[in-house]
Image (cartoon, rainbow, N blue to C red; front, top):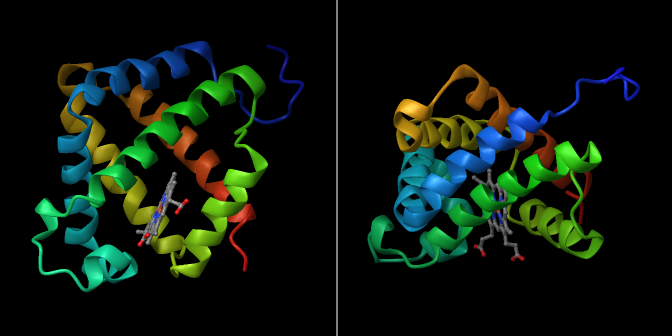
Length: 159
Ligand code: HEM
């Protein structure tokens, strides 16, 4: 790699670290997703108010059936972002769905701090799930993929 793209490029090794750890987690995606969101709400309790299905719900957080799908979306889309970063050097999401996702996060009032807390909780959850597989390189690979995905979402965070 002669660095023609200017920035650092996402390597095959980094892609493999993300895919490998996600493959371990995805068997229990629901459970890890729940842990992930519980961590987010421990650090930022007010973030619960953003989710329409949590705001007015009497069901305990861990029993809310709608939480797991969002958690899984974050995992799956970050993993896909890693694959795209290696293949294409950038995050590619179909225009229509990127617009929709950006629009929804704008509408519900998601701000930079939420994305930061979520990044922290994501990495902590993967660390727990990966166990002995966890490494500084694995953490870095997930971080880069997440940051690039969030940057893509933010470009469409407008009304
Ligand atoms: C909705 C993905 C980060 C809060 C959604 C949807 C997707 C998604 C696919 C469904 C959009 C639709 O209705 O079509 C992601 C990804 C993220 C991310 C990939 C990070 C990489 C966050 C963060 C927060 C958040 C950090 C706030 C803590 C929400 C809320 C909704 C939503 C409030 C609407 C839920 C509702 O219907 O009440 N997200 N999200 N998301 N997301 Fe995210």
